[in-house]
Length: 300
Image (cartoon, rainbow, N blue to C red):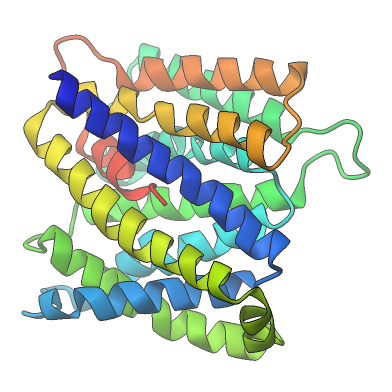
């Protein structure tokens, strides 16, 4: 990979990591209701991508379901989870989406799981459980991280179902992600959450800046660069490089939000990353379509 393209990949991972930190500050520090935050974010995405909405894709029901799972549905769970979970632990637990995708692709698409990939799946789950398990807490498993895991599972299901969606261009799909997300999220935040506008007004321009960063810089700029790199290089080269995202998130979480990173977290992170590398790094083979779809979808 050319140095320029590696630098772009590093920039993309840094932007994704920064978005996790910003999201934590928004829903925890500013106390913005997470469903409201997700609804407004995808409302902006829908408005910006509106020119690419048509023509209407075939299999509209499947497109809407995949778009919701990959967009507002999955990230609403993530924003709800990160309200109590640390960005560092959330970034590691999100990586469990990769082995979940592999298992779903085996069950739903008949993709083959070799013993090596099976070992990687097992190691990733062991590492993820170590990160989620906190013996000092009243509840051994963090409720916030369970929601984050649900977000990862939603993205994994969407990635597998995405294989059966044909003829939808990336920007067109982004438009449908925004549209499929904003309507149900707007209904949910109206029915469940309270004082959304009051919290938003109190947060002021900082909340506006966070929204613009999320919708413009992350959803449009970072994803556009990433899709360009995916088109230019083999998936087996790009997918392992995305590990920089959780590593940078851990570093930013420790330095900005004061995340605790003890020996248990370090051990779990190391085991999970070993599993991810075993799953994604395959000599003389291409990454299965479903795993590539996951690597494209589970970005902030």
